[in-house]
Image (cartoon, rainbow, N blue to C red; front, side, top):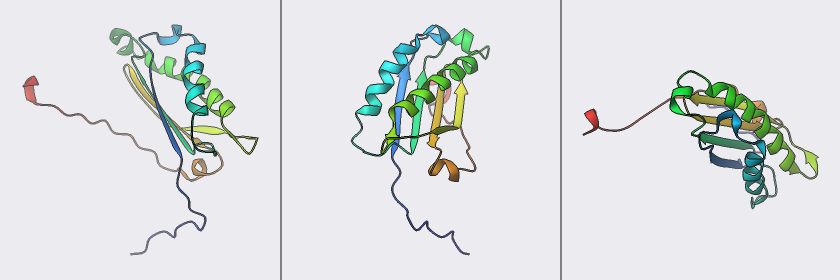
Length: 142
């Protein structure tokens, strides 16, 4: 059994992880709130290069009864557009525009996870994205 050869110019990946509690605002939340939250995170990085992967988690997208009706997906779609534009706006590599692609998205009622990858680099090598839900706890709340 042989393994795939290592890339000759392998390097560590830079991954930026962020979480955001929308406080049940749904699509009524003002875009500026998200921009103000995201921009300082992007500019505070100690790395000179733009991140290869950006993962953003959301909590409390909508009240539970609205999330159960499937409305979370529309809210996430609008947040995706804003997020991607801000990630690309605030990440530059040697003064050049860095483009990102949404490579994975998981939405469940009021929580969501969006994962972006740089178009040039790891984004070109991603070919199979899978998600799984897990949980823990005791039987009958005991």
